[in-house]
Length: 112
Image (cartoon, rainbow, N blue to C red):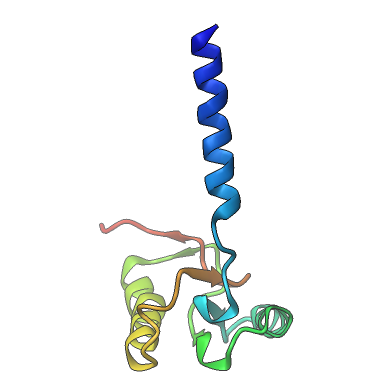
């Protein structure tokens, strides 16, 4: 009986800690939009407007609209613009979530 009681206490503790966690605020979200995809731009604008994401927290990248991207293109066309924006806009310590909008490749190819 005590094992079951301890398990219940642990579950309640986890649930209470989770409930106390703060929700993300709009200034903690970085939105990444693919300029080469009209759908990505439309969805990104709508998402940012609905969530009241500051304009400085929107990063526009130009990359393929395909599901996969090469490692080199990922580094140059996606990773670098995000990194530059975080540094230049002084967002690195504020951002807790990066939201990739539809149209951003979701799989990066390995090195050959």
